[in-house]
Image 1 (cartoon, rainbow, N blue to C red):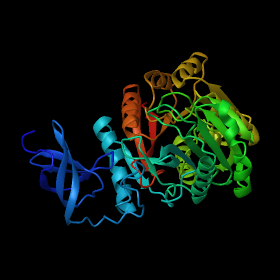
Image 2 (cartoon, rainbow, N blue to C red):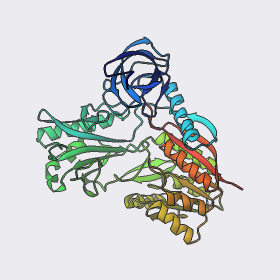
Image 3 (cartoon, helix red, strand yellow):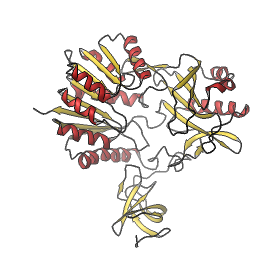
Image 4 (cartoon, helix red, strand yellow):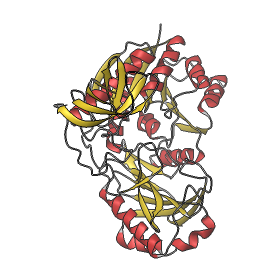
Length: 454
């Protein structure tokens, strides 16, 4: 690229925001991406990286500051990889996220649905019911915090504004214990040490707390014998403490082996009026109160009635399907993670729901099995992981010929792709609504109504 080189300083107006949260402007037709900027900013930009067709830059100074710009209220927001929008007002964040969804459905899916009004979040701080803190060693001491952007370097900081304050207090107590007893933190380079992550979950309505320590070897668990009484003395809401063993050189946080130090390895919460049991491996929306609004909209779009069969694909612990079970004749839930299915069965029993069947297995393979055994659900709810639905799932969802498919997605790009495929299989994309379950981050959920074409 002849026009720009590293360390050039150029004037740049920020005109858009990318899905990664970077501001973007154009200089002589070349896109320049700049973090921590807002639409309307006019900056002096230093070029820090030059690629074949675009550049990355850094704001050196501001000629004009956007009307939507504010000062970040977090001292590590520019270092941590968690929040990308602490420098703009929340109304602008919602506009940006709504635009993310619209662009994906129109550009990727080539779809033209009705867009329902975007649902912002009432509480933009302290909303998370789950946190996973990496542990590292600095100057001979264990430290805890969050990974810096695009790295595995731990930024030492536990007072995250997205987490409830009690999480910070618990983590500080654990790190103090670890350092007092000289328990080695995991070293990713040397592949040595014991404590890798501190993983916490909390029932947003019940207040019950789970403490899970991810370690390289459960056989060395004896060093934590005195931690449990110390935690219980300070935090009465802790209902279970457990160890998770992960000896592998991997970015995946949790391993498969568990050891319970206190309690039965689960906590309880209420969601959509149902009591739910949550284990470490269970999927459970991190923003409970906003998820309840999302599920209510999904139920409204589903148009359920008492003579219907509802298929809940990627059902996790059953929270979505069970919230709708009393409105239908039969509920079938499908999930590949066995502990989540176990939780779903417990959740159904605990709430007196007797019309639910839960099956453990891959969504596509079970959808095919259900089709072959003659199941013809009236409505299908699909809530896949970020990668979206696989081809087999989409094929057999359409073959079962439900009147409506309601998709809940944490990735609007894969949702748009999947809805376009369903369009080729006979379903129209009617309505899309965005929900902000992750304020101050780039993540956003959406719910989509697909209807069988007559």
